[in-house]
Length: 217
Image (cartoon, rainbow, N blue to C red; front, top):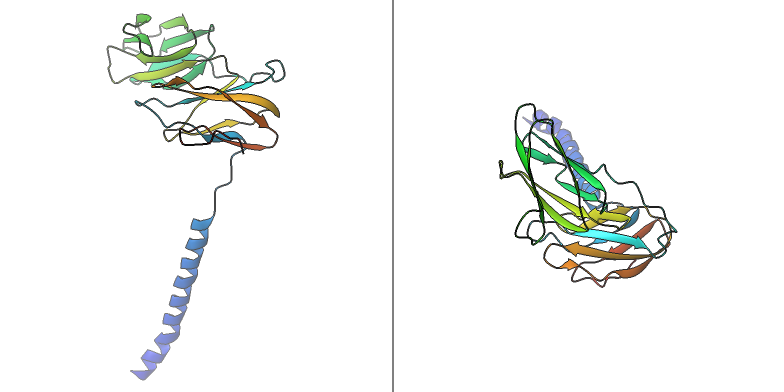
């Protein structure tokens, strides 16, 4: 019995040491902070009424910085969903609604936020493409044949614009250095009063949340 016990003790000690090391490693990983994003980032109002807020950025001199390219202004209907479900477009440009289903008809309704009737209500047969021009603002996109299908489009002339996350966190990406105006739009409050910020480094943090001080960092 003595031999068996003495032979096991070193193994138990090694096991305990390995467990302790593993625990210390877990603590170190948990304490590591995520790197800050590059470009303009920060906090905007959280989603309201199920719609995410939009962060808008304009250069003080509109001719000083070229506007970045935007996604193709197209929303497709396929697999009983609108894709993408959120899209930012430029006002006055033609956007398209397509139906890529092989044998399933859809419908496209475009509702300006707060409107009582849609400004577009059109059947969308398979392979149909419906073109439409939007004025500035937010629009609910629905299919009355399939009530679960929803999308949201926001039209703005702001060269940089992005939907915030559900909690209001946002990233606009890298923009050229210089003075800018930044603001938000939410479905319940509409447009906020833009504030002035200076982008002078690779990272510029801005708090646009209701409880923030609206200051760049």
